[in-house]
Length: 163
Image (tube, rainbow, N blue to C red; front, side, top):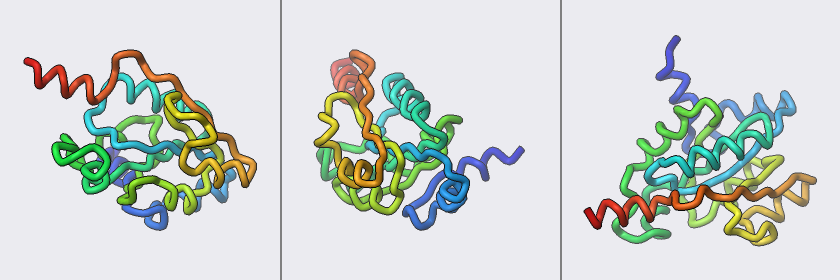
């Protein structure tokens, strides 16, 4: 089996270049969307993404580009470059696509994908999640997932700094 081709097939630079999306829509697959920087992949990310994937048939991750992460998190981030982050995420069996976005929010990407379910962490109020209006207008759902306590990229970075 050609795992490398399957991995790269999951990674797209725009919603339009995601070859799998039209097929899923034609098959009426329930599409789940979430987004983030996913800078240093940890157990909290895995738990969150597995739970998100369980809400539908296909899980799409909107991945902040390096430039976007830098604007949001500061000049010392990202720690891991965007291509490496995308490959790590695409390697998970429960992740069906990873699509980059360069804006500060994934609003435009959500508009293009038109997911059935939008997922973010429980630190957000559902009505304040970027894309809430898009998804609910078409009858979709916006869900939140609790984080694994103590698991965060910031905690890992701080632990490394204090060694």
